[in-house]
Length: 48
Image 1 (cartoon, rainbow, N blue to C red):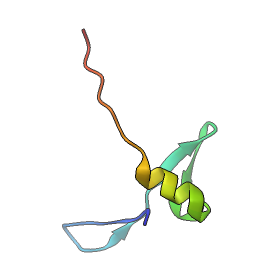
Image 2 (image 1 turned 180 degrees about the vertical axis):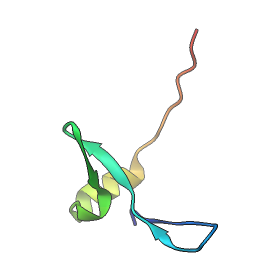
Image 3 (image 1 turned 180 degrees about the horizontal axis):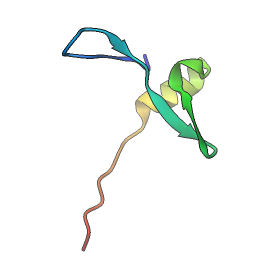
């Protein structure tokens, strides 16, 4: 779920996300938090 397959070598990569000031592997999160991570929407803010 929180891992992605690398298109170059077809190996699974580990995804990290920032939690309360430090980075943790998403695979170590509980199932509910993992689903919240999948459901997140990212935005790109353009400079004015």
